[in-house]
Image (cartoon, rainbow, N blue to C red):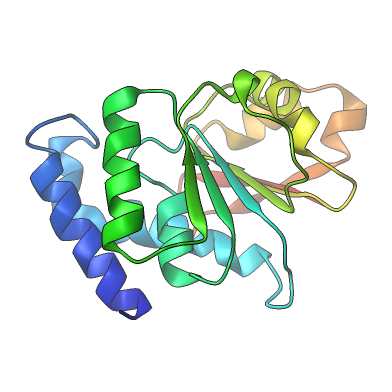
Amino acid sequence: MEGVERLEALIAALIEENQRQNLISKPSEAQMWVRHIADSAQLLRFVPRETSGTWLDLGTGAGFPGLVIAALQPEREVVLVESRARRVEWLERMTEELSLPKCRVEGQRLELVTPFKARIISARAFAPLEKLLRLSAPFSTKATTYLLPKGRSAAQELQAMPRKIRKMFHVEQSLTDDEAGIIVST
């Protein structure tokens, strides 16, 4: 199964599962490719091809962006953190169905996950920036790249941080939403 095939299978399964549990908003089903798939995949533009190491996705929910990244880069170790049991079951089923042996699901709160060195940390709609940085600190190293889609609040959230934190990050324009930003570590 190739990347696009995996993504098509993910979309079909997601729309079906969305009838049982609210993984995404009903209106966003019609814009699945842009709103969820491309929005997640665009994070790869900030990761040089030769970058190896574990990708940690916090509060992955329906698998965005982590499951999309794993589908596009099945050779990469991806860890999806999600505490809600029904979503954990869904994510585990998807990693199996999409043949993603290097993608694993941590079905618990981030605070309970045994820390490891993450090369990339992503989070989409997980927590306010201050809390996100605090909770992810045990997984971060000097080499860790943060990729944090924050929507319209990106610049505002970063501006509210202390100066030493602001110097470590910048905001990139989202390719899928003219009003959205992605907080990226420098």
